Length: 281
Image 1 (cartoon, rainbow, N blue to C red):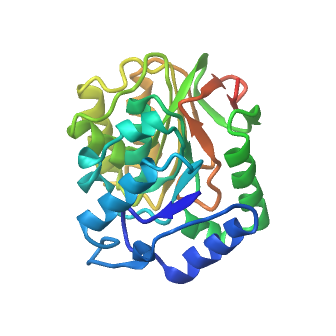
Image 2 (cartoon, rainbow, N blue to C red):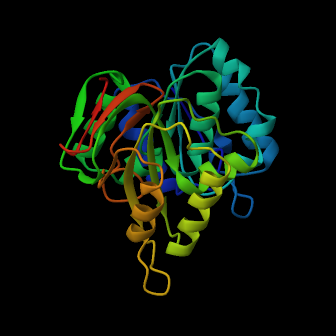
């Protein structure tokens, strides 16, 4: 596997801890440029683009893991040759800004893993790391995630897609987002106030991006403050009810303490009444 920094600059200590844990089980490679910094980016666009394309085109890699989120991938994905991913399929692993990679993997017809970045593994506990390992090594294994809150009852089954709401909106504005018919949509975000979540969802709905989804799973909306007394949960409930599909909430994935790995592009089943999301179904 390879570790890349296609977005924001890395915390060296956390990334090295994550690399150390990965190296106990896997052959891990990375370029020294991983730790470059250009303002709020992990080096220049040229460096990050070259690193990403080199890994996508490497037939010997089984997975490419993102070191850290932040911002930067939307600056380079439109110039990236994702045809190489179709020729040499591999797992793209990460979350937050890495949602842009999940969107491109979906366009290429390749599954990807929404899971902790390497820096997150550096501060993760044994349970989080073991959950990550199982998901990476057996992504199609059946897992039932229960205890979810039913917002709209019903059942849905389809390919699991989604990620960070802000990034999905950014990808949609660039014409990159393609949500397959009958998909189960998973959403999370961080530090977006209620009115901004409303704006993001409204723009995606108005563009018809979610017209064909069969169900929605709401994850963590971390540090997302209310706007004039209106909470983010209220906005999400109102807007998602308009889709008239099953909706559940409370899945621990995203920027919270836990970040449940989710294999995007693989089938999932949602049962609103039971409050479950079953992966590998």
